[in-house]
Length: 121
Image (cartoon, rainbow, N blue to C red):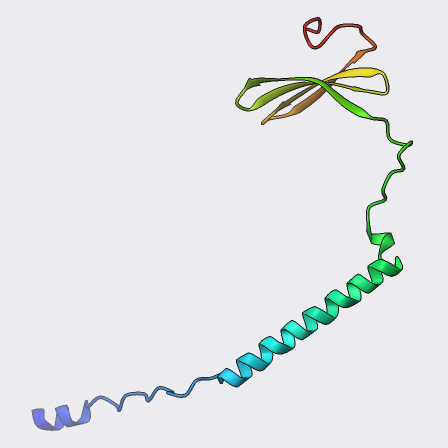
């Protein structure tokens, strides 16, 4: 009885795995060449459109020289590793800018005659 049981429970034949590659090296090379060719054509077309000015509506406008007042950093101090204080002037008005890792604050100081940050509190 045991010999009949063992003959029925034999394992099936193992699965034969594929030995040839799914993609040949010729296909890989041709795919890479086509990709490089398409990228090159795209680059040439974008460069051509940029020179013709067709991409201007997607670019940020460049301010004219007189429209934006000059920003001058008069002084800067490092308070801690993550906090910096700047004294800046634009359009004749001085501002104190406090920059930290948590937040940034801007305080208008006006047209004061204080030199540097010594007189501001």
